[in-house]
Amino acid sequence: MSIRKTRWVCVLLPAALLAGCADYMSHRDTVTFGAGNAMEANMAIHTARPFPPRAYNTNLNRDGKSAVLAQERYLTPGDPALPGGSGEAPAAQ
Image (cartoon, rainbow, N blue to C red; front, top):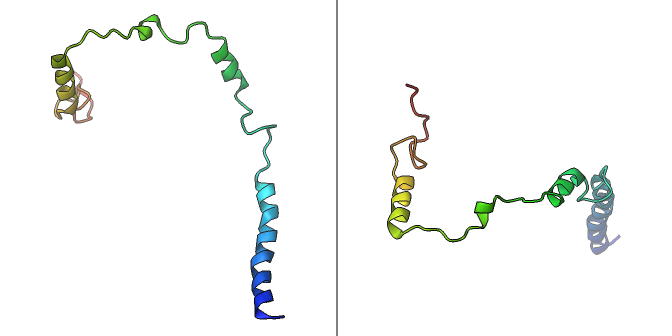
């Protein structure tokens, strides 16, 4: 065989052998890839009010000062009780 034919055989033979593995590895115990969450889907569909009424209120009565204070509390390290704190739990008293 020529060198060109040998190269093609060396490329195509492993590709043909691995193509069978791809089909074997894709086997699943379900009919489709999305199967398996029917109970959760039915519960979500039949939920009467998925969000509390206050979630629909888009009129937020806040000013710039409260937003700045909230950001400073968040970014200031130190007090573990605050969201931007050191991350340690507060000591029990």
